[in-house]
Image 1 (cartoon, rainbow, N blue to C red):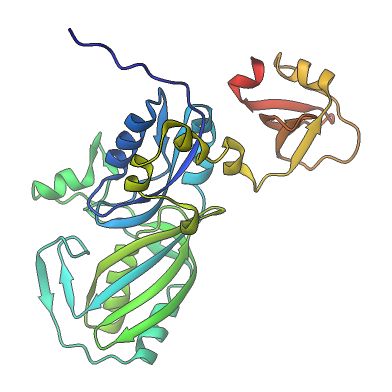
Image 2 (cartoon, helix red, strand yellow):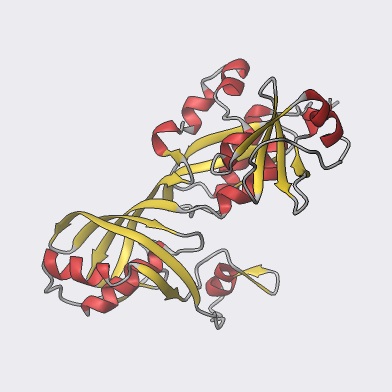
Length: 302
C-alpha cells in the first residue's frame, strides 16, 4: 500500500545556485520535493547550460514572483569568437568557422555598441511559446518559426578578460534579454561570428549569487535548517516603499477595506506591515488618500 506524501504550507524564497544540466523546472521540482512544499514556482527560465542564481518561491511568496521575473539580471558570459552554431551556444552544431583577427580594443568597441535599448530577435532554441509549444520544440523538428524582434535594455557590459578568441564579460540587462543572441550579435559586428560557451547568472533584483546555496548543500540540511535559509516573501519587493499600519487599520485592511493613514504616503504600490512588523502584503495609495489592499499575505488573516 502506498502512502501519499504529506505536503506542507511553506512560505519563502530559496536563492538556489542552479547546477549545470538542470532545467529551471527540474531544479524547482527537486527543491519542492525536499521541502515537501505544497506550492512553488520559479522566477524566469535559466537554460540547462547556464548556472547560477535562480530564486524559487514557495507558498505565499509565489504572489510576488513576477517582481523577480521582471527584474534586471546580471550574467557572466564566456564568448567564443570565430565559430557560429545552430543554437548560439556550445550545444549546437557548428555552422561556420572563420579566422579571428580581433584584438581586445576591437572587442570592447564592438560590445559597447550594444549598450542601451536594443532590438533582439529571440533565438529558435528558446522557451518562448508559439501556438502552445516552445520554440525549441519546433527547432528540434527542423521547423523555423518567424519571430518578431523586441526591445530589451543592456545596462552595462564589462570585459573581464580577452585572450585571442575567448572573451569573458559581465552583462547587466533587462528581463527578456538573450545573452546567446548578444554573443552572436557581437560576433557579427566583428565579422567573425561567435557563440556562447559559458553563462552564469550572478544577480537578480536585489539578490546576489553570494547568498545562494547549491542543491547538494540543501540536501545535506535538516528540515529545520532548510526552512531557516528561506528568505522572507517581502524580500522580493524591497524596492517598494514600506508603510506601517496600526492594529485597527490592519483589521480593516484584512477585511479587504481601504484604510486611512496619517502622514505623507508615496504614490503607487506599497509594502504594508503591522506594528509588530508582520508583512501584510501590498497596498496602493488611492486618489482620495486611502491605502487599498492589492495583494495580501494569506497567513496575515490567520
